[in-house]
Length: 393
Image (cartoon, rainbow, N blue to C red; front, side, top):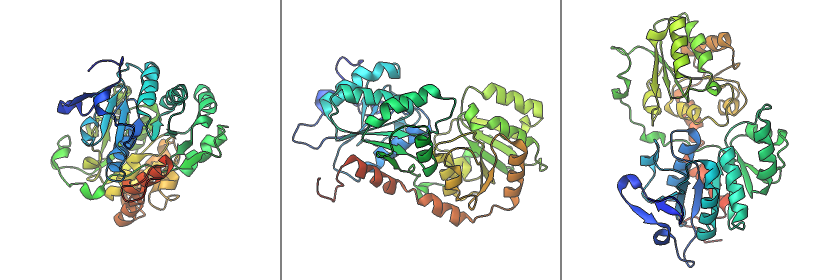
């Protein structure tokens, strides 16, 4: 595969099928594709969402589906369906993807292009303008805008009003974007993230080999090992629990691993804390937990919380900026604790271990409200694209 002089389109490079742009593009008489643009399919919530949407839309529309990335590989690469065309722009960094994305838009002229993550969205809007605005453009904002993020806020104000639609993941994020004075009141839409197909979850104990035998009860948390996820607060809260037989399992990887390991040692809980690393399907482990905890300082729309509900396990989440409160229906479906407060989090964890508030069925029903086909239909409507059974607009 070569960097873009011409755009390089790779369909499942891992399956040894490569095609140049000319051999994969449709003729003008054929239906234009729907394209999703994300830097890569390396493990992350936004990346997983776009893979899920692309895979789901294959069965819902006659439009070809393109997944546009700047580099190959990633934990979700093998999960992309063969019917989805992976377009590799061959850029080493996002800022170098602008010329390649512009050429892609000029050459392919998709029905619609949807991007996610703020800086990716900014590049997408610039490329779309340089290409002559050849399609509908949607940008998906995945996280809250914080007061200290002045550069990000300025970029959003300058570029987001140019898109046809801005997608907020929750009512809270919708309000947050408008409160940040991003002038998109007439173009913003609220669409949640698609949930997993929970019927496909298979119960297994093979994934629990990192725990001692017999397996103890454990609390599970999922996320990148970064400041945002608040795992330092979770470790402090966990150390304050009176029940010392419970273990803590954290699924995810990131730059704070050394400091979290050192904190576990200092708190005297290292023998009960398991930093497992990245897991492609966290629900394989979450489903066996006694409790799921989301300890974030801020969130957008946390898929891991929705997936935890889908497994039926009890949940605790911080009442931080983002969609946690609305997903849990103001605490009806799980305990809410103040962010950055180890005592409050420890109290909520202890309560949830004995009083989970909702039934497994109630939690699973909430998750099913975000079934992938339902969410994909909402995107399809914004794309101005027809379903396979509906007439073309």
